[in-house]
Image 1: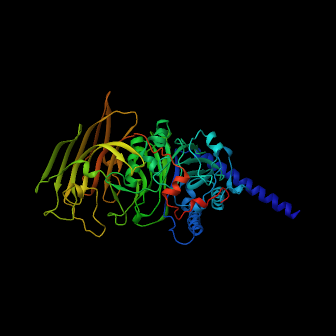
Image 2: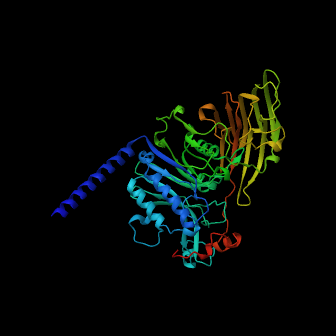
Amino acid sequence: MVGLRKRSSFCFLYLLFLIKAAQLEDVSASKSFYTAGVVEFAPAKYQGSFLDQLNDNLDDYIQIINSHEASSTDIIVFPELTLNNPQYLTFLPEPKDKIIPCDSSSNDYEAFFKKLSCAVKNVRKYVVVNVLEKEVCTRTSQMEKNDPRPCAPNGLNSFNTNVVFNRDGMVIGRYRKYNSYDLMTNVTLMPELSTFETDFGVKFGMFICFDINFYSPAMELVDLGVKDFVFSSFWYSELPFLTGVQLHQSWAYANNVNLLAAGASSPTGGTTGSGIYSGRQGALVSVMANSPERKLYIANVTKSSQSKSVQVSQTNRKLIVSKHTTGIRLMREYRMDDFTSELIEINNDGLTVVEKLLCHGSFCCQFNLELTKISPTISSNSYKYHLAVFDGDRNYSGFGYTKYKFCAVYACTGKTQDSCGRIFDGDTEIHPEIVFQKILIEGDFPKADKVLIMPNSLDQSLMPLSTDRFEFDIEDDKQMHHVKYSFSTASDDLLTFGIYANYYNGGMALFRTTSSLLILMGLSMFALQNLSPQS
């Protein structure tokens, strides 16, 4: 009888818990915003065993999910390639099967994946993680998918995959990365257009890292009307246009969508950049870390259906940066020396006015600038500036390409073009030489079926300008987008200010098999050939 009373009390308390949870979820659905968290996460270094690395990452994933800071969140997004490794690939359930790995007796799912599901179920929130996935590949399974590519000798495909858990720890979403910059994983024959819906009334689309540079799946989902996105990345920043947060804000602003971007944190290796962005409002919270960290960043995000009536004040914007970035390795745009560029010459006294039409081939941009000199002498440790225009192809180390056009003002460490796309190192004391009082850039960009025209800016803390500091306007006629980009708030720490247009021209669509990967990787440390469907 005592045992029965204890069981009855437990059942009653559990019922109260479920009722309370349901009430909280109903309240969340009725609110005009949702609370999102993105994780800047430093993966464990490759020392010790592969299992040690996995457990190191997993322990802190679960600690973040259970943390007091995370308690207010509706959804948490983790970055790319910061959890498991190719020695511990896992099978994944199909979202349509509505499986809760925590409750599953199947041996298909690795222990770390079940633990994550249990942690999510315990805190009852949506969580997006990126895992290295394995899938059995047979001639029959390839035929069922209308995929003509052969299977690898070991009978496995491997994918770089985003997985979504709902509040019950159930897998409700999956996206396999299509535009892959590495040779570690397979890609799907065609890009997956993956979305998931939440009980707080928001439908999310998913894409991963390098996908942001291509039309499918990211822009295709935008064109289908998706307004909120989760984005996991292991992003290598590149000057002058493609550093992490800089690109996040540009993409979210141009598409006027909400973007939850979680980045891997290895600044000295070149990767960092996380943030939450609300369309034309810009970054709500963002970080470019100077040193590796494992940290959750949180913001309230206005639902797209409420965006006209609810505004987030720019004073509530949180930028987690140092004034001068010291610890981040930065790449340089490989075509910079092909740009049409011209050094901005400044007067020794008073105001310098620049009015210049600059062209690259038939593509031209009009620049109107006002600058004042603030340093009495020219310092070797001050940034010089070039006007630049370009129209051409952009290749990504042989993995894919797009066409792009831009008009921009950008910083250089010297007067020559080969000094552009670089910054002074962290030990250098910088002496600003000029202040930009006004910049107006205008250009006519040809219309195309697949194009995204973005405002692009960057200051010396590797952050874009807040959206209340500039104006970006596009007027259309039958053949052209007439674009104006301007700001009139004085700045002495600009690195980049320009109009950047991506003309999407295909994607990766590489014909790759696991067997070819083994050759290309030289039977590397990951020893993929030793994996089996049971591993």
